[in-house]
Length: 459
Image (tube, rainbow, N blue to C red; front, top):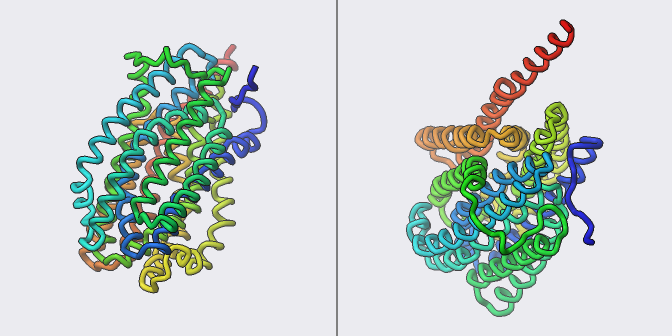
């Protein structure tokens, strides 16, 4: 019998278990960011600055759909983890099969729509004429892989929900290495330009899906995939959508908001597009610490709520905050004081390098705000309040940021205002999430605990 790969997060040392669970997620994000970065490095060094700008211009658009599926898997993962923590194997089995089939159908539809409306999406970001052609080619090929992204996100969400963060890490390592090799082969050797980069990406995505699905087919654990059981259970789908759809809409709308932020950047020319694109890649390596811990939070909380251990869930939350701040305190100065070196890995264009350095030096000192946002918004989701997380995230990352940008750019239209918009959004979203957690989740639990203690004393 195959060894079980799930992890029960309801017992044992909290800090140790969170680190053991979150570390593979973090390393997986490193490799995922690595192969996204290699796309830009290869294009920027072997093709041209305009080609790098085309990939950058398309990146926020591709994240629109990727973010939707990531949100869907994150939200539905709360349901999976709750059933796992409660040892309800039947409902866990049904919810997994319903979510996978739904992701397959939705992935096919969204890939087709994306290919058709590519020109419209590029007009939304005000894509400059000198990078239009390459952007269309890159984005349409990339959309083919949306189906694979959809399936992988749900499959990896299932694995994380049962405490298995190791296998998704292994798959990302394999996919990343494959993408790097294919990038160099298609772009540097075969001279396929941005098309080669996009093709390398979707082949790597297909490989990661194959590996994740194979794991679910061959395991003897509670999350085993049985093809004949793939059907959409209406009641289960409703539960999946109640938790998953708000997270999916949240991610999709935030990505849509980023398209309008990209419009501001595009207005400063292809050098700004290339430089800020490089800065975003670098930024993602520091930000992935908070994101990885954020991905661990809903699973930890949901398992413990399912096991009727709310106090352990509360303690774990502050452990995650401490881990996030400590890691950023180490990584932040390294990136900040060597920003020129890191940006030049992507482009040697002096103007582009200057834009990239400017973005890093504005955003990096305020990464604690992103940590607070990721931890507390995901904590609220872990307690089953996915709709609330959607509204706090939209309120901070979209509404507050767009208001700030509209005002600041009308008063002083400089690109630094665009950079400041990111921490403004994190701070507002974090503040709303923390307030909701303290007064709508933690305080009622304390009141119930006090009522129980009073009743015990009276007895």
